[in-house]
Structure formats: C-alpha cells, structure tokens
Length: 387
Image (tube, rainbow, N blue to C red; front, top):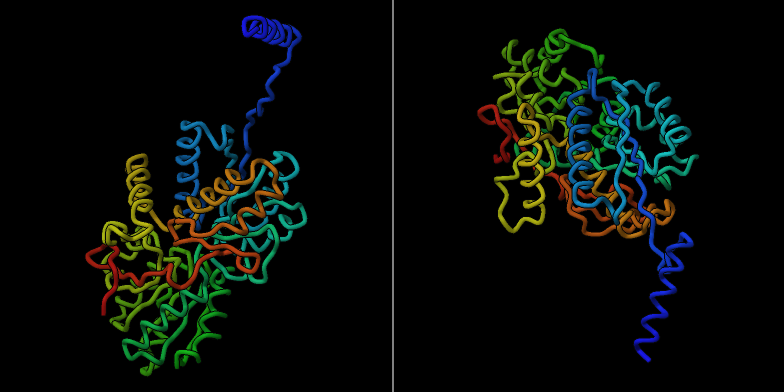
C-alpha cells in the first residue's frame, strides 16, 4: 500500500510541475523598497552623510544575510541638501512614482515638518532622523522619529547647570526648525530648574562669524553660561569666537553636537563643551552589562571599518535606528503596511543606538530622559562628563 501511495504521490507532483504550478504553496520573495530623504550634501551634510552611509552599509549586510523574511531591501536615497522644498518633491516622488514601503528621514526637523502631512495623507510610514519634538507631538498615525526628545535634552542640560550652581544664562539658536523648537523648549522649561534666560539671540544658519553676538553677550557680566542650539557649522564657529574674545564661561550645546567633525571644526576652542547625547559616542566606556553596548560597539566597528575616513556619529545612529525599527516591524507583521505600522507602534525593549525604544500609541519616539548621557570634549575627543 505504501508503495502505491508513494507512486501516486510522485505522479501527482509530476503532473503539477508539468502543469506549471506547485502543489505546496510558497511565499514569493519580493524587493522591499525603502525610500530615504537625507541631506547628503549642503550645510546639514554632517547629518545626512553618515545617515546615507549607514543605511547603505546596513542594507548590504541585511541582503547578504538573506534579507528580511527572505525579501531583499531596495534602498532609494534622495539627497535633499537640507532643502525643505526638495524634501517635499522627493517625498511625493517616493510615494507616487517609486511606490516605496516606507520613508526614512529627512535629516532635519524643518524638512520633516514640511512632509509630515504628506506622509500622513498617503498613509506612508515615516521614520524621521530629525530631533524636534513637534515631529511626534502631537502624535501623527504614520510618523515616528528616532532621536531623543528636545525636552529631555533641555532637562539634562539644566540639571547639569543646577549641579554647577549656574542659574543665569544666554541662549543662542540657529534659525532652523531644530533651532526654533529648541528655543521654545529652553524657554518653557527654564523656570522648572530655576534658570533665568538673560539674553536670547537667533542667528542665520549660514553664519560664518558670530563675534558680534558674542561681544554683545559679553557686555552682560551676569551671564554665567551659554547654551547653543543648532545643527550647523556655527556650533564650532561660536566656540572659536567665544574663546578668541577671552570669554571663558561654560558653553553647552544641544544633542545636535554629536559628530566629532563639529569638534574638529572648533579646534582647541571646542575643549570643555558640555552636551547631552546617546551613548554611541562613548561606547567603549560603557560597562559590559549595559544593554546597548554590544550593539553600539558592533555598529562603531562596522562603520569605521567600512568608512575609515569617517567616525561614527549619533546622526548615522538615527538612521541605524530607523531601519532597525522598520525591519523589526516587517519581521513581526510581514508586508502589510498597516500591520507593520501597528507593529512599530507597539515595539518594546528594542535596543538602538539612541537608547532602548518603547513605542506606544501615545509615544512615537519611544525614548525617555535615560537615553541621554552628559558628555564633554576632552583632548579633542568625546568623553563622559563628570563635575
């Protein structure tokens, strides 16, 4: 009987193959198109460059290991140059023409805010690499972001100031979406920490000399420290102008300072700058039982091996986290976009470069204040800050 059944099964399979179909249903693998809008060139290239290189490296590795659930990733990068109008055009192109599964980026807050509604209306998953809290507050169904919250960065800065006995400060911000958002947070949270903002100045993102603003602020002898909130080369320029003028009050920067190239641009003047950032920049200094350490060290080694001319940055890390989150969602939910969106919104305890992500319907950032470490520049390198 077994021999007869075996022969019959062989005949059935042979018939099916000749007829052009398989008797056992199999899932057909397909490419998953992932769009990315990044400032690879231009004034924000310190952000977009590492983000693009990170995504290219990750996609290459993921595909070499069989893809996501057997599906290969197809990465389509659009270089916005940090221009919001280009970001709008590219977002529409990726959605309408390229038919991407999701979009990573943009690199900057201003660009992200310009395309937030476009993504929402198209029901397109958007994983922003920009930091402004307004990107996810209020929550938009399809929009997520990977950098830590502005408000938490401000609280870390003000908490450190309080420990140092600093209560009277000056605030400088670039005229970008990130700068404007930071200015609002700095002003709103100051009373909570007993901080008095004695002066507030906004400068153009293209500024190459801030010495006039420095001279104006120096005239106020009550200012005990300066907070600069920007993502442009002016971060290094301000440090130089302050030290050239002999003004040695502490300089605090935002979490937008997390690229060693900003330190290199500031030279010796960058020494002693204090800022909040994720732990990627001090990965080797973390204890071995830190839940992020293995991931951080691997990313740093992989990136700096593949791109020896570049050092790992928190900005590349934001793209790393965005793709990690998207892949986790697809692994859980398959290729149904709505189910993937739902999966992302409910991801818990997911280690990333910026912290441990815990998303919810009320929180599309998934990070808290514990994702930050206060860092400083010591001997031209990043180090954990200690009083």
